[in-house]
Length: 161
Image (cartoon, rainbow, N blue to C red; front, side, top):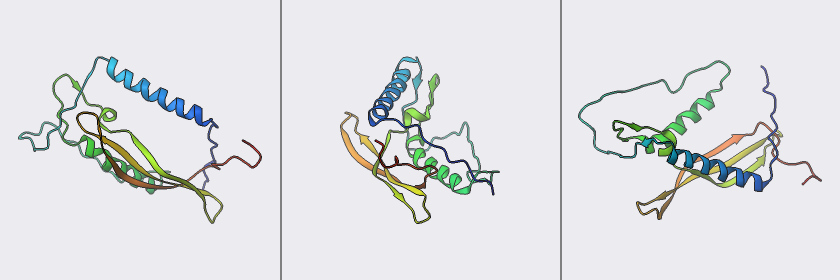
């Protein structure tokens, strides 16, 4: 069995991570507002009379060199996303965008632990903020819990800062 090489993350300061996140998020939002596209926003909960297009794909496939837990994670992520996407009405001239329909997700209770075999695991719960039509915070919605084995040493060695 071939072992994957252990990748080391690029070390960035907390300020760089914070500013980078804000920069790229604002850049993406700016592109959405200035690209001249009209994004689909209308949602309909009632079933429509006519089906124009359907698509089905196998969600779990045994792929070469891909472990099945990644396939199960994909299914879980799609299940979460489909709540925001199901029922979207795409009108002529509108663009369907996965990213404009799914909401920003953030982590709570983030924890890294050293496991008995010597490796590390990451644990966190994903939530999203839900706003009403007046953009007032309506709810802090739990989405899922994530526990993952890390492929690299997440902590700095002693004596470095």
